[in-house]
Amino acid sequence: MAPGAPSSSPSPVLAVLLFSSLVLSPAQAIVVYTDREVHGAVGSRVTLHCSFWSSEWVSDDISFTWRYQPEGGRDAISIFHYAKGQPYIDEVGTFKERIQWVGDPQWKDGSIVIHNLDYSDNGTFTCDVKNPPDIVGKTSQVTLYVFEKVPTRYGVVLGAVIGGVLGVVLLGLLLFYLIRYCWLRRQAALQRRLSAMEKGKLHKPSKDSKRGRQTPVLYAMLDHTRSTKAVSEKKAKGLGESRKDKK
Image 1 (cartoon, rainbow, N blue to C red):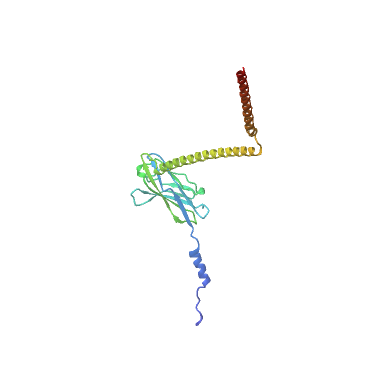
Image 2 (cartoon, helix red, strand yellow):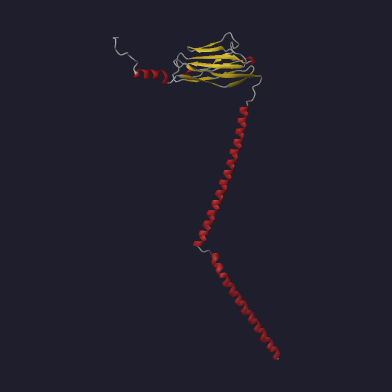
């Protein structure tokens, strides 16, 4: 560089592009899912489910690793590994010949089954998934509890009770609205009938009304006839008595 020449400095545009590529670009993080806990009875089997989400297509180099940490223990040991399309099961540890691969990478499933459970299997199982180039992410853990007899879970019982109560309430509401609907429909029908009868009376005078008008006239004529007859009878009696007196 010649003396007095201006010193070269990084271009501002280049600095911005470098910052964007290192900081602003979204990180490719794989997300792994497992159950929080599972229960099993002594001598039975249990499935440890493991699935994942990845922004990349499922790679041929995908791998699943299961680790086990005994209850009260500090160190976790690898008990299962899947890579290059092949499952590798621990042939030495406590889970020797008791683990079965039931997953399917194409369906993003890395589940395993543990057979012939024992109390010593209580502990935490960790599922780790790598789907190159998506290899950054957190693992997921599931805790296994082994019992002599699998207890009924409190959440299941509570859910059944709540479901039953809601069912009874919904049934009661349904019956209430059904009865109310039938009653309102009957009332509307009666109202229509009364309205029709009232309209008919207004437009057509009934025979009963005519008879009702004629009845007072008939009674008046009958009364007049009776009174006339009574007067005639009195006159006849009076004439008869007067003739007797003359004799």
